[in-house]
Length: 126
Image (cartoon, rainbow, N blue to C red):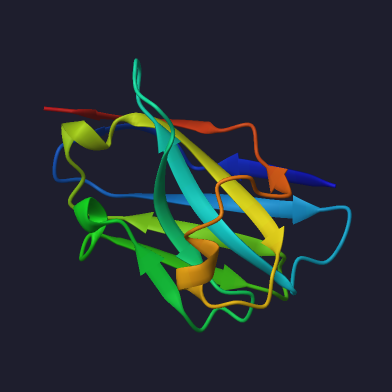
């Protein structure tokens, strides 16, 4: 079982990036999924979560209105559309998954997920 993130890179402040997290090895249709990030010298923090069905979502306050998480069960992929990026969004972004039928509110409380990706670097220049 593997989660592989892609889509990171260098972008100017105000720009956009879309991160993808492709799952392989099994179906993740029954998994709630989340994005986390870790900036240099800081602890890993929660960014966004989506329920197993893709219907409910949850965001940390600092990204509300700018980031959108979505899940495509047919493609076994979760996305994070990031708009109006700021230098403080610079971090390594990780996707995570846990088999859980709860809402995104529930997924957002999980810190020890069943599976983690290797991370993708996002750098926002000022």
